[in-house]
Length: 273
Image 1: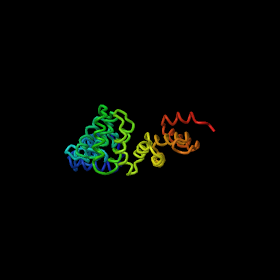
Image 2: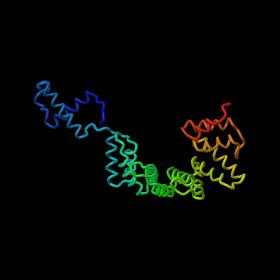
Image 3: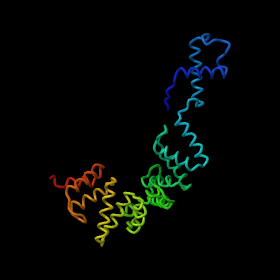
């Protein structure tokens, strides 16, 4: 339900005008001729008519209905917009994840990269649709290969992490390297983290260690908790990086502040002083 603030003076002027135009109010008789109760009923009836006809329709609601008509006609931008509204539950629209999925899928099939990314995330987490990891990977790949831009880079980073961690898919370091390199070139922090971990693979070189340190520091500075935690571990143990307990604590605290459980556990094991 939309609650709208109405200027009463303008309201009565509009009601008077509408009543005259619809012959509910006669020009031949002054307003004072009507009993008060009859005037009240008349205005009440007109309020119902105006609400039914969207005479005072909320601008956000009007915009939603406009976009909805475009979406139904097949406009992919409008389909994606409607899908986002149902996903977020904004513009006065109640959140409805199954409807969000339906509209995002229509836009994704029209090759909209942001809709393709959103659809992949829906399959990944089971939002509005049953969780389907293979479909998530499929849509991440379609998005990642769909030109250049933010959504494509985000999809490339997601694929890099998926193949790095090997969750619900076989761990594949060459595939992770492929996607992390594409996104890291664009400065994507999560991709930089994935690329750093590739450089620290078994049988890595001293040059790999130097590159990994730079990539981890960059990703950690951008707020990636996995990178902050990994940097803290290496600084604390003096592995690949010179031992620095204070710096290790600092990075662990930053990751813990984001509720990264491994960092919270690490802080509990670190010396107090």
